[in-house]
Amino acid sequence: MQLWTAPDPAPNPQRVSAFLRVKGISLPETRLSLVRREHKSAEMLAKNPRGQVPFLELDDGRVLAETISICRYLDELHPEPPLFGGTAFERAETDMWIRRAETLLGTPVGLAWQHDHPMTAALVAQIPAMGKAARVQAAAALGWFDGQLQGKSWLAGDRFTMADIALLSIVDFGRWIGIAAGDDLSALNAWHARATARCA
Amino acid sequence: MQLWTAPDPAPNPQRVSAFLRVKGISLPETRLSLVRREHKSAEMLAKNPRGQVPFLELDDGRVLAETISICRYLDELHPEPPLFGGTAFERAETDMWIRRAETLLGTPVGLAWQHDHPMTAALVAQIPAMGKAARVQAAAALGWFDGQLQGKSWLAGDRFTMADIALLSIVDFGRWIGIAAGDDLSALNAWHARATARCA
Image (cartoon, rainbow over all chains, first blue to last red; front, side, top):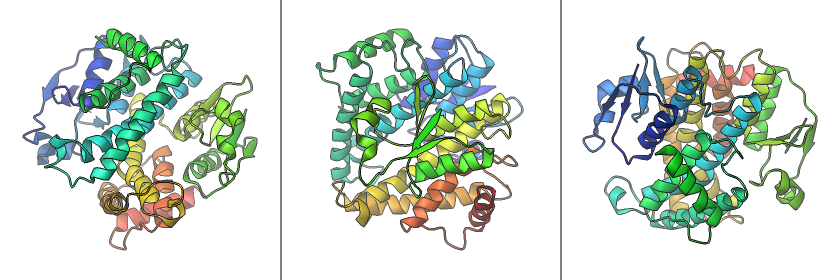
């Protein structure tokens, strides 16, 4: 199998890279240029009709897209250490935290990027009021995660999971576009240092 | 275990109800009034800090929130018929289609609901331009799903899955707020009739 991806710091490729490092998996990779829009070519759209990277192409030609789904598949093929949970409850709990990371923080960070960042101004019809509102929502979400991380090592308690990798990639992308956790969010910042070290 | 939920037509409770019907699972349910904001009470926030329903409370007090995560757990406990896939590839493929349904259609439908619907006008600071743009994005997503459903019975081919339940609930909620598939989207409309019958 091979991974079609793009160079960092695009957050989805970064998320798969971190997962592969933590798992100790190496895969053949082909990196596409997002700037040259290679991921939107007819050849790539035939593989992933959503027109995004990363996606995983199996040897028989089947394709899996969507970052979390790709990692979920590889986690089953290489079960140790389990990053999606080892029991039915743990798998559902991990999924819950992934979804909270993406919905509560990922969505407003994405909207801030689309509607309130100079790099996207030429690509999308920006709605500045939405970008500003999204920054406020993202800041509130950082506070919520700080509360949830009080007294815990990781989102799912003492289990480091894919949810931590997902949240880390979103927090880092948010920082890069100017949405940063203040010093008062001490539990989140301590978690950030732990997660960064764990994914290095 | 018991399910804390709310009456239809809220889309997340509806999605869990459809899943339980298809699986033939019955669970004790407590329905909270969203209008009276019972899901935001201190007692409920202690169970689900996100302040949403549905969530599942196990007999030992552990809680699982997030609609898809709840269904994922119940699907493992009651494996037949498998609605999240029976193999590693099928599980990842199902997850991919769930994510596509939620991201491509669910996100703009949600934004249209928040920013361009009279029922939410009193609850959120609406950004009408965002609501209008979201309706355009949602319409484009309906067209994309129509293309993806050409020649297929279900999103994952011949397997009816949780992704169909997720997409159905989003399409139905979209209709309810005035985002409807035109008659020209024949593959999507045929799928909608099949999925509605399958979930009845």
